[in-house]
Image 1 (spheres, one colour):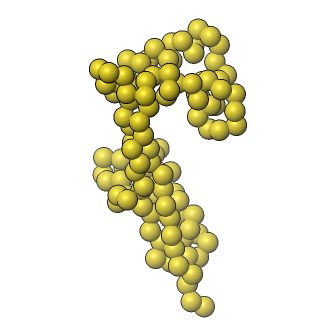
Image 2 (tube, rainbow, N blue to C red):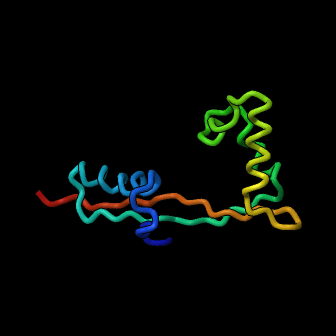
Length: 109
């Protein structure tokens, strides 16, 4: 696990969402609220391994990014990803997936 995102993130939507989790716990009356990032390595064998889930019409969040696009826009997005993702010379794409863990303690009454 890693600590909360540092000053580079402050002011970004990702930072606000991350810290908002702590505020939700505090709003319920919990104390000693801590938020931690859980970083997990994610390896995709090649671009299609990464791309395919984004094209399926499934209720998962990732699919909402591309499944509603027409063929031309989907091709543009795929090409943009191909140009910007860190694809190794032999094909794999190594990324870091981040989840958040929040915990708090019930305050004494």
